[in-house]
Amino acid sequence: MRFRNFALACALSLGVTACGSTSPDESPVVPVEETGVSTAAATATRIYAYEPTGTHELSFETLGTFETRNNRRVLVIRGTTNRYIRDVFSFVPDDAFGTASVISERRFEVVLEEGHELNTMLSGLPLLVSIDTFTGSPTRYYAQIILAPRFFDFRGPNSISVFENVDPVYVRNTAGTESLMYRGRVDSAATSLTVTAPDGVPTVSRVDADTFNLDWRYPAVHQAVDPHTIPLTFTAALNTGAVVDETARLVVRVTGLAISTNDDPYNTWPSPACQPSVYTCYHSKPAGTLDFSSCGTYRQVQRCTYASACEVLPGQPLSLTEIGFPPPAHALQAPASASLATTWYGQVGIDAYSTPECPATPVTIQAVVDHLHETMQEVLPFDWGEATDRAGLVDRYFFGASNDPLLAAIDAFAGGGPIQAWFGWEELPCHNCHSYAEYGVLYYPNSGKVIVLKSYHGYDW
Image (cartoon, rainbow, N blue to C red):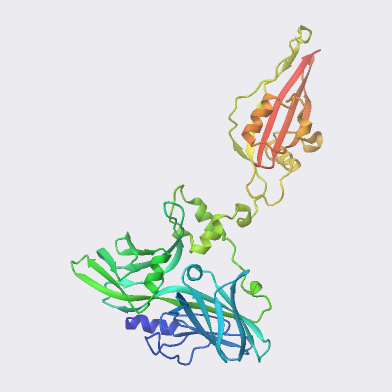
């Protein structure tokens, strides 16, 4: 690592150690202490966490090592405590995960098999470990461990800058069968960048004039980190015409560690919910978008892919947004009897509205009618009419039988299903005649659509 970056990492590495050495395989020195939670810089050989009362101390070697056990490649991470260990157990929410074992009085290891277990951890899911001790109070506590791919051991000129982080991001392939991508970054004012290695070579793509992305799906990123002793070589054709190389090794590191004596680790570290900003970003992308890395990490975006808006966004007060009603206005047919020639009917006016997708309080027909009356003066007050449901629509002023064509057209537009309805009427001033205005409001809870019907009729004296 370049000296200035190494010095900065040492200055900022709260809760970590090894600022006296650039090798991840050397023995640790005395750490800078931090209670509860730690994060590891690229130069740290160990990461530490302490229970607030000081009763329990926990540390991990930051560098995971790959071994072959039972003819399987596995990642091994090793921890140390300040108490004699009776038992350890590794898990993720609601499921045992990995294999934790006591290897000496105060040391233990967690083994993750290559494939599903390793990929899951590298994708950003924390690993939980319960630790039972013979001494101390309490005798059981929990650790939360974060693993991630990280570059280190940088060797080369300043004209190529390989970033330490390789982050899991949400990028679908064209077949829609994969969405987890591991992405790194290289900065270089270059016309091209290539990466070479025995295997585990990323896909390189240009972002802008001096930025390149490095992308791996899981099989390739595993090849790049196992074995971690083989570096990747980055070759840049600089804008100046020079061609330069840099090498760096990609490894699996313990990048985060926390400790808790709470009886329920799920209360201490609850599974995060979909964040509103991530949800909005994800759902604002155009149809056909594959790359959602700008919205957050892989797991942040994944939580929002199946979340409903009402689980994420704050509730909205009742409002009615006008929407177009496609069918033409339907006329009520005047009776054919000549004896009623002095009776008239008005055309039915139809307005359509949508209610908020996530209302703060349940929408009811009374709330809709009150809103129409108070804000738009569209209808009479709710108490001046009568509320009913779908069964009560038959033989109303606007509808006849249950197969009425006007109701069928409204159902097709609003989505059908249950209906909350309200009907009211009022007499209008009329010289030598009687005239009446008729109002109907239909609310479809399943679609959130509101249909407002207005008409009039009358007859001469």
